[in-house]
Amino acid sequence: MPVCALHLVRLNDASSSGIDSFLYRLFGGEPDDVNFGIVTVSRVQSPIIRPTRIDTTLLNATPWTLLLVASGSSAHVLPTHLEHDVRAHYSVVAGIPSKIVTNYHTISAKLRDVQPPPPLLEVKLDHNNDVIPPPSFSRDTRSDGQDLSLSPALLDLARHLNHNVKHHGAVSMLNLLHFHTAPGAVESYHEYGRRFATVAGKRGGNAKLVGVVISPLSQGLADSRGQPQRSKDDWWNECTLVHYPSINHFIDMSIDPEYQHINQHYRLSAIKDTALICTTEIDLAPFRSPGYKL
Image 1 (cartoon, one colour):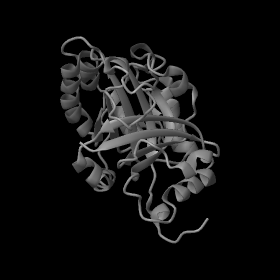
Image 2 (tube, rainbow, N blue to C red):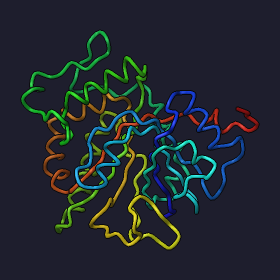
Image 3 (cartoon, rainbow, N blue to C red):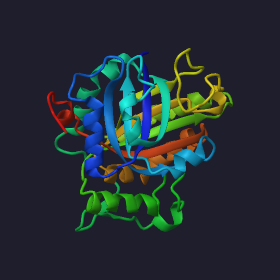
Image 4 (cartoon, helix red, strand yellow):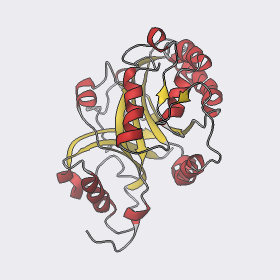
């Protein structure tokens, strides 16, 4: 599998104009450098599940601006001309199947453009297009949502996207996974993945990027694990980027009893730590245009 890297960056200027300027410099008005090719860029909206063991201070305390997924032999290193734009940086080197990397744009566009939009099966929306919490909300959920149940924070995020960001479309959920070392843990999570495809698929949810964290790192590669020989038992093992037609579709899945059954039986028992971050994909066409000048 080709070597890719996921980069979380906090920009010095996280305003809309600051992000645009960063992306124009990233592409530079020139064709992609084959050594650092951009697969996708997303705007980070909010963490949904915060890690409790791995790199918690950096990951949880940093208001990340963008998620970049890069491919190529220099995918693990941000271009030097961007360094002055970046206040904080976190990266994970992973192997991602070449078919996904090559066809990512087509895969993502096909998921995003499904018509008619998939239905909401569990929740109803009010006149403001906000989720109406189900009657069982207060007694069946954790307040922090760390178990992937509906939480006040998740409802707040949905309202924020709806009213402040004015984003009513697709979201991309970045998931970093660290598995238990007990026998069967990885297999349990993969069984979760198979069953997840059915439950999420009814709502248009689909994993559009799946990567295996490279461990140990090959010579010349580096990411935020620090020591290249850091044990895979002590860091992230897999990463995924999952599409949902909207944040409301993600909420709809989270309260589905069928989903919570597989979550409780296959997912929670398999993972030792995880980070789940809501992002919204950026249309990169304007930034790739040749000849653009700031």
